[in-house]
Image 1 (cartoon, rainbow, N blue to C red):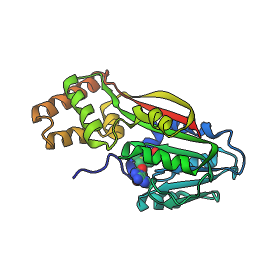
Image 2 (cartoon, rainbow, N blue to C red):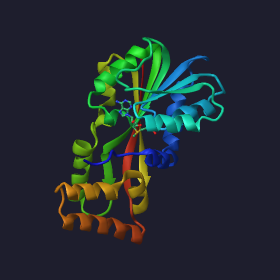
Image 3 (tube, protein in one colour):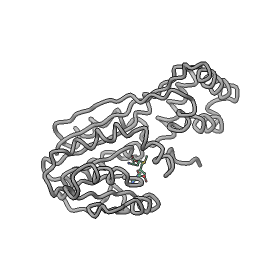
Length: 256
Ligand SMILES: C[S@@+](CC[C@H](N)C(=O)[O-])C[C@H]1O[C@@H](n2cnc3c(N)ncnc32)[C@H](O)[C@@H]1O
């Protein structure tokens, strides 16, 4: 009934604001031997494989971006300039056409939250990784979304909507280490990065807060008076210069 919590434009917008976390996530692959293959599952428009290809010495690694949405893959292919070591595949990440123990690194960003059977994703990741291969997972922790303005009861309802209704696996970020552990990965690490927005327009642009509040009203989760009160208090905080809203982004990593 309602659109997904992202689209091509949204991914392009979030590229800017998440660039620090993205860059950090690439560094986990620093020690992969030359000639290795790194796969980005749920690659969207492919910016991360292209960034990595540009960041690591040209042609040091092979990169494969995989996504089930042909529109995303077409955008990725169109963004290739002279990166001959990057290719894209349209595929479900739960069943990729890569051989067992064939890749050195697997990265995935804001993917696990969309997967209803996350253990199957980590099973597939384990299958394609070589022994000692590295998996790096970047996730937004929707449950950590906090507003420092206005009615906290409505903010709680927004968290509940996002984590339990809107996002398929809305508590994914908090479960990553459990998934990795259950699938037999070792050397599991987790890092948490707060992502802070200082005005209401950015909260709408990067977190789609206005759309979510409208959806909650349409679904009778909140009343019109609650919707209006919440938005009014966010705008008021903004006008007064003390607006703040935050969410954590986590990076989990592990070794096969
Ligand atoms: C929020 S976007 C993140 C895209 C990209 N990783 C990024 O950070 O810019 C989630 C992506 O996962 C893809 N996706 C979701 N479920 C998938 C599945 N089962 N198989 C393949 N791709 C999937 C979507 O098509 C979408 O491009």
